[in-house]
Image (cartoon, rainbow, N blue to C red; front, side, top):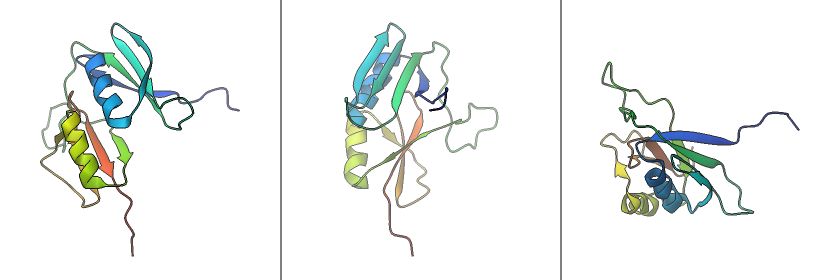
Length: 129
């Protein structure tokens, strides 16, 4: 085994606990650890999946997507979440607090923004000719 390994992705937010709660609802994750300004969530024990951490950043500025605003905070990464039913999972994400992006680049992907403004994608695998 390698002496190093990727353990989590950390997302900054104005309130780590609020954003962690959104992703708990969206992904069915559980809290693994928490501190006043930091939360680690992950899949339930025995379930595969990547953990996510959230850190309170008082100076947080949401990214702009698509990147059409010179000088604005640009998106540096986003989460891709594979789903089985794109319409149903998009509706569930919106009910949990997400907001659909105005620009939708593909039929098999839905770009949404989480409550802190991070873009994320729900996608469904489609048969390609």
